[in-house]
Image (cartoon, rainbow, N blue to C red):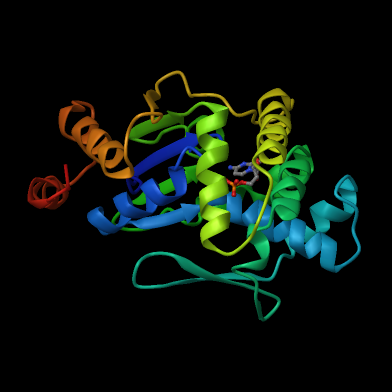
Length: 246
Ligand code: C5P
């Protein structure tokens, strides 16, 4: 007897498309688990930095990835405290330097293979919202619903700029746009698991949409998606109950 696996919704896209926030809101509404796959790559980059491993040392990074001592402690709002080797690194992994490191280590095939089963292990009852670059193409190709978010580089850089400013970190917008272009190029052109929509993904351009409007759009896709039998009735009812701000 083949066991039906828990349903998955994948939300892929470049950085700054809002996918983290959107995935988290969606998971919370649905009462599902949430995977922030980018955080895993970031934690690996931080671990590499901590242990003096270069971001291009594939062999050492593979070993590090296989033995990564990381815990995601889920909070009530579904955000996670991220613990690396017993130390809370939730904020430390969000720097631009570690973001770039994540993009470098993520381009190495052995690293991606080493992180595969860790990511799939997040698929638990009653379901999973998975956020990343290759969730719909590589990690969960059988996902019930695949969303690919896009936004212009300028809009994404501006969002990131405002986020950092709110956290009291001052950055130059021009530098941010440049870094974003470099990271996008590397993520899109890498040989393994490049950033691209799955063939069956629904593209949503978020440029002129608020976070709530994007969430609403995804929920409407859940409603209309005919091939969604794996989604249980309670969830459909739950969606019907949702009150999302206009
Ligand atoms: O999503 P976030 O910006 O936190 O991801 C940081 C970096 O990790 C990305 O630029 C990307 O290179 C890498 N990444 C990846 N595959 C994923 C998620 C993130 O290669 N599924």
